[in-house]
Length: 138
Image 1 (cartoon, rainbow, N blue to C red):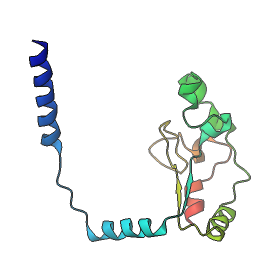
Image 2: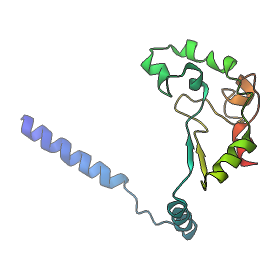
Image 3: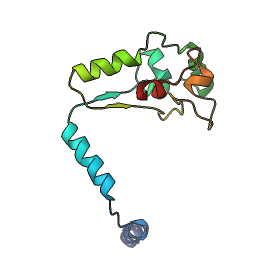
C-alpha cells in the first residue's frame, strides 16, 4: 500500500508540475539585457536594510529569535546619515563595476524606497526619511 501511495504521489507531482509549466519565450529586449549583464561581469551587490543595525545579517530575526513586535522597532534606529549615493556610484565606476544591485525590499518586508503599499519603508518609518533607491538611481 505504501508503494502505491508513493507512486501516486510521484505521478501527481509530475502531472501538477507539467500542468502549471509554461513555454517561456524571451522577448528581444530580455535577450539584450541578459547579454549586457553577462558582458558587464563585474558589479556591486548590496544587502542592506534595517537588519544591518544588529550586525548579524539579513536573517537576524530568525537567528536571534527576535519577535516581530521587537523587530518592527528597528526602523526607528535606522538613520544612515553618512550614506552618500554620489560617493557610492563614483567608487563603483572607479573600480570598473558596471552595475549596482541592492536589496530594495528584503524578506522582512522593509522597503528601502518610498512606496504607497506600506508605511514600513525607509521614508515613512525611519529618522532618515529619504528614498535610498531613488538617490542611487539619480
